[in-house]
Image (cartoon, rainbow, N blue to C red; front, side, top):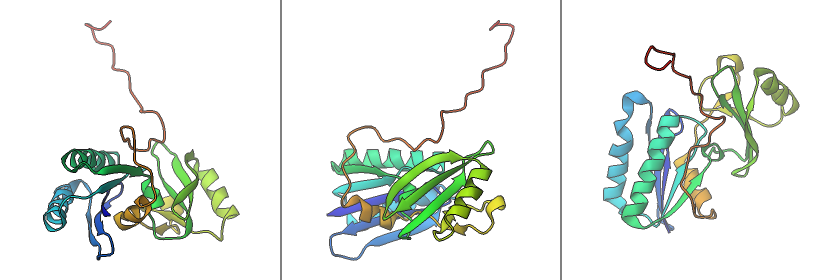
Length: 201
């Protein structure tokens, strides 16, 4: 099975291509706004080297909204070109540890928390306050806590990024997505009502 995995939910992006028993091709690169073109440069190189996949798996976050949307849109376009199976999986399940809690900045003075074991979300991701995170860390000191970006209030948390290689492994036993893929949302979109103007009153 030829599997192409796309992961752009954090500041370290990755692409992996697996072809049965042969060695995988893996590319890691900065995925912030300053390096947005590197994703397509690396994808084009892998496409030229390995051809079209049978299965495409894409990380759904939570994480960078823009990065995750770019990865999803690219996966959908590639499926149209290759007629490949399309799978979406939580990015946070693709960290190279057998069991862990993952935390992240959910903005607006809140965080997210998820418990992952053997590539499966046991709980979460759910929104959590700073106090709730400290409580969870106290209760589960034997299990590592990881984050994909530095969190000043949790300086001792280990930094770790999702891996396209692990996404490809998880995809081997995952079900094909039968609906439009979307990033994992932690809350409803925040919309600010426009200020009243003379022509809208």
